Image (cartoon, rainbow, N blue to C red; front, side):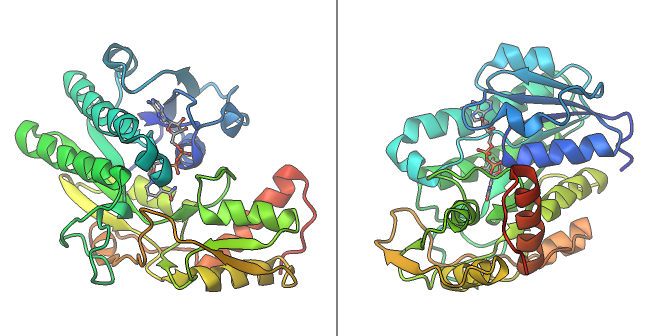
Length: 323
Ligand SMILES: NC(=O)c1ccc[n+]([C@@H]2O[C@H](COP(=O)([O-])OP(=O)(O)OC[C@H]3O[C@@H](n4cnc5c(N)ncnc54)[C@H](O)[C@@H]3O)[C@@H](O)[C@H]2O)c1
């Protein structure tokens, strides 16, 4: 798709993935409105584009239907990234998770329908598979989420499909698998790579919850952004598509790789009790993304980590020697 002059709205624009997507859309010449209630996102994530004439940030909540009706004027495409994103917090506060993720998403669909938005591309999650035993995860497998967060994501992608079937709206759900990269928060609830990078810089040991044999399909955010662009470009609708690197790595292997790339192999990896709601193995079959989106990941995990570490050191003036 030629994004030049297109009006795109990104929900969760001040968050990790939403901000990366927003920067790229602006580079491609789109006019972008970013909305976020700053519950978890940071305005600093948008600091390089706040003065850009093609970008407008509006603070607001996706649970506020009237707010959405106001901001959805003349929008061609919505990228819906806003969410209650923490699995452990969803276990502590299932109602809040449901309210933001399910009610908020239903609001977006209803408002988009009223305002004739052309297409909605939704950020779903590999957490919908839960403890489904088979690997790699294929889109048609049963969904057995094991956290309120997973349930909310499963419900939202079902809504995306139903709004396509019942109202003929163009919707696509991309099931992200463990995304990492620039602007990911280093907080107790964010991805392990951002947390470990913070600990490596502070010369602290890396902590693994469980035996370290759990595996993940870590996907570099630049590949996730590219797949989102492809989902707008291709004439597909009502689809749910896995979006991963397609190559699993165990947490112990990841820890060792991060220590090697940052020349901090003297730091220890320590093991603690497993966390409730954590899935043991997760790994995407990305054949559908290859077929429908012509998507091919450009970054191996090692290349993604290197690119991320370099960005981080430059941005925060940190002195790490990256191999
Ligand atoms: N990061 C990953 O590994 C991953 C994996 C699978 C799926 N996802 C999904 O991708 C999307 C983006 O995730 P992220 O990692 O960038 O998380 P994030 O927490 O950095 O971004 C989410 C953004 O949504 C905003 N938000 C929360 N509640 C809101 C509300 N009520 N109204 C408006 N804005 C609100 C937050 O302030 C935040 O900026 C989410 O839908 C998430 O579930 C992420």
